[in-house]
Image (cartoon, rainbow, N blue to C red; front, side):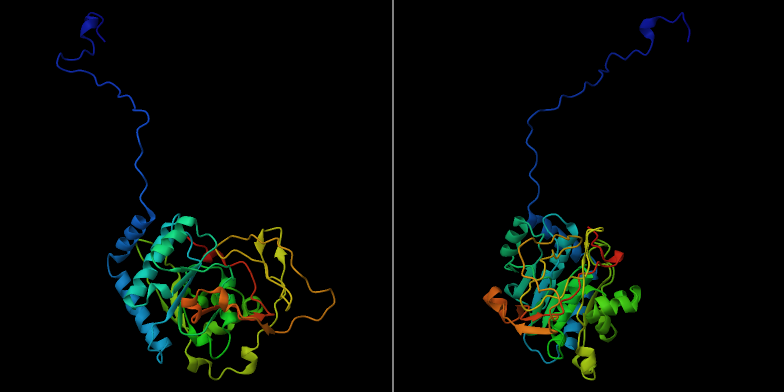
Length: 347
């Protein structure tokens, strides 16, 4: 730089230019209120309706219902398990928006939709009430007896919950009542060693080859909400030639793995026993600490079917004729094995 240049001319500003001053931040400025859960659900519904995905999925569901329940003139009931918390999960809002759209498309009254997830927050329960859906009060780990044709929506649940549902309806009369929208069960048969699956989840292992499955195609707006999801059902004709051995389920012995913090298969409860109340949602392995009466060491194991004890009085009256809680206290309860790694909910 030329030392003879006057310092006043160095990096000078023109007369008309005034340097900007840093603006002071205003204190106590009120923050904008977050959108309500209803607004967020409406937004998810709007995003879901873009493109052809929803229309094609609804068409696939209608065709599946016609095949699964050809003799039924009445609209099916709906049981939703493991949805997650719409208040905190975008995927859960998308799944709820899909369920509502499907019910509206099929003219299913929302009062015939029952839902449960132990992670439901007060805001979620309030939303379900506004939508006229029934929030079931108890965690039965998916052990619901289906008395009539029912759509069971279980997005990305743990494998043992699918097993529990099938086991509770494991009969030629009740199994055809189940139309499942959930993880594709044949994937478990393909990815889990057959001996392990047959031992720990015999219902899934036996039923998977006979299921009619219609996969949902990927949704670009919600890629993790509906991935690996299929509409699945079994025709009564496919079960007609199944022998007594196929319908007879083994008892399942189990234990809780303390080292991993995950639940393995629980002991089969006897007539005077109760199963641990394990949370329905993904990855939650809390076990209740309430005192339980245990079978004396050395006593005979429980029979495959214990004496029936009805729990239909615990279900709201307007859905009691469709969804019942474990009417038969099955001595061979479904296992609580950890699901494959691909069976984790993506939020």
